[in-house]
Image 1 (cartoon, chains in turn orange, blue):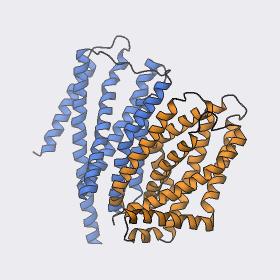
Image 2 (image 1 turned 90 degrees about the vertical axis):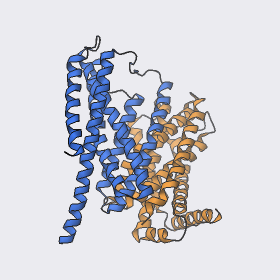
Image 3 (image 1 turned 30 degrees about the vertical axis):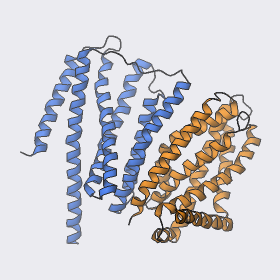
Image 4 (image 1 turned 90 degrees about the horizontal axis):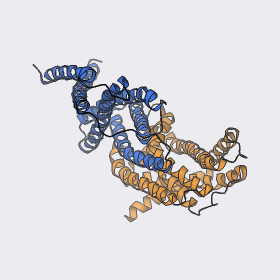
Length: 226
Length: 221
C-alpha cells in the first residue's frame, strides 16, 4: 500500500516539476478557457437578466474544453519520446501510474480554475459563492471525475492512428451525468434556487467518481498488459 | 442442415407472422390511429439494442478475464447490430412523436439516454477502426464496452432526476393496451430477438473467416 501511494506521488511530482519548467499545459488551458468565456459573451449578453442561469454552463464548457486540451498535451509529452512505454515497464503497480497522472492532471485543472473563475466573475459579474459555499467541493469532485476518465481515455487515444481527435468523442458522452450534475449544482450556487438539490447533485458526482475509480482501477491492469 | 440454417427459417416464419399480426390482427388504435403501428417495431428495436449492448458488456468482461478472441468478436458484432437497431429506434421515435406529441423530439430521459447510448457506441466503433494492433483493439474496446455500459444507468437516473425537477415535460403515455396489441408486441419482440441471434451468428462467422484470411495472406507473402 505504501509503495502504491509512493508511486502515485512520484508520478505526480515528476509532472509538476516538468510543468514548472515548461509551463505549457496550464498556460494554454488558461488562455483557451478565457477565449471561450469571451466568445460566449457574444452569444449571451453578459448584462442580461437570464445570464445567471446560463453562466454555470458557460463556465463548465470553458473548463471542459480547455481540460481536453490539457489532457491531450499531458499525454503527448508522455508519448513523444516513448516515456509512457518506459513508465509501463517499471516494476510497479500499473494503476498507480494512471492515478499519478490523474492526480497531476486534476492539479493542473484546478490551478487553471483558480485563475479562470476570478476572470469569469469580473466579466459576467457573477458570484459563484452567492448562495452556497459548496462550490469548491463541486469543482474539485467534478474535476477529479473528468481527469479520471479523461486520463484513462487519453491513454487509449494515444495508441490510435488519429490520436487526440478521438478523445472528446469517447469522453464527452460518458461524462454527461457528471457535467449535468456540475452545471445544475453550480447553477443553484449562483442563483440560490433549488438549494436543497445541491446535496443531491453532489451525491451524484461522488457516486460517479467512486464507481469509475473502482472500475478503472479494476480494468486498467488488463488494458495495458502487453 | 446446419443449425443456423434452421434458425434462419424460423426467423423468416416469425417475421412473416409478426408482420401479419402488426398490420391485420392488431386493432387500429382509437386516438393515435395507424401511426401507432410503428410502436411494434420501435419497442422491439429498443429491446434488441439494449439486449445487444448487455451482451457486449458481458463479453467484454469475459474477454479481459479469459483473453479468448471469440468473446471480442461477439462483443464487436453485437455492438454493430445493436447500433443499427438503436438507429432504427432513434428514427422511428420521431416519426411517431410528430403527429402525437406535435414535436419530433423532446429531451425526455428515455430519449436522451438512447441518444447518448448511440454516441457511446459510435465512439466504440470509431475506436476500433483507428487501432491497428488486434490485441490492443480488443482490449481497448472491451474497456469502452464496460465503461459505456456502466455509464448508461447513471445517465438515465441523473437525467430522470433532473427532469422531475422541471415538470414541463411530455410524459410518455403508458397504461393499458389491448390484449391483441400485447400479443403482437410480444411476437414482434420474439421475431426481432431471433433475427438478432441469426445476425450475430453470421457476423461472428464473418469475423472468424476474416481472421483465417489474414493468416492465409500472411503465409503467402
